[in-house]
Image (cartoon, rainbow, N blue to C red; front, side):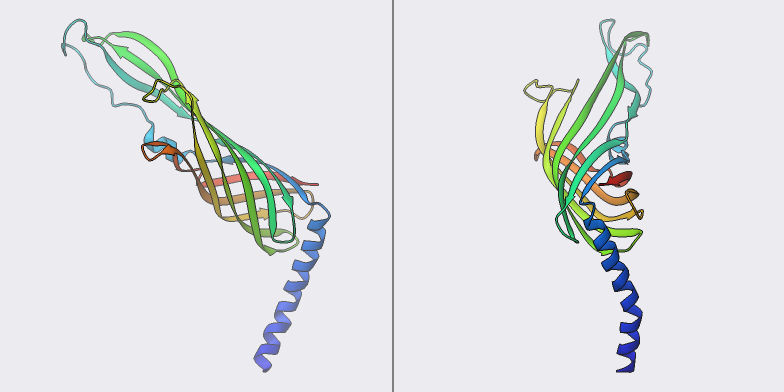
Length: 218
């Protein structure tokens, strides 16, 4: 019995802080945040070809293409959320990422005949639900899920010759933290963003594993 009283005594200040934090948050139910995420997944699938020597390979009319100068922008995302209650917020987010490179064409004498910029983008539009399970005056801990559509476009074409394709996008923040007492706050979360059209057309796979950002409550 004494041990239980000691535990309850230790928890009371924490409960008080959570109640105070929830009350202050309810005064500012709207949130907007800007986030930047990694592009580790893109860098694993899209990279420069290994340079080769094409001298005396094939015939004089032979052409060889290499991917060079590959680059990836980070994921850039904007999110709006409305706090329904102390633990649930609903809203939506927009995420954008671009991958680019140059196609370099050689002849069988290793001479460069052409350089052409290539690339593709993913634009994800997703309704979002966030679930906050810990509150304090300066730190919140949450998880979230976003499910919507992804628009994939660029110089790449699908089997039907289309430059733009639409699929399903799913983003999950398995564990997220916000840091900040008043209107402005920082955030960091871990999870993943994936998008696909069907089983044979995958746009993104576990991209944006780590995301950081800044937000504003009003």
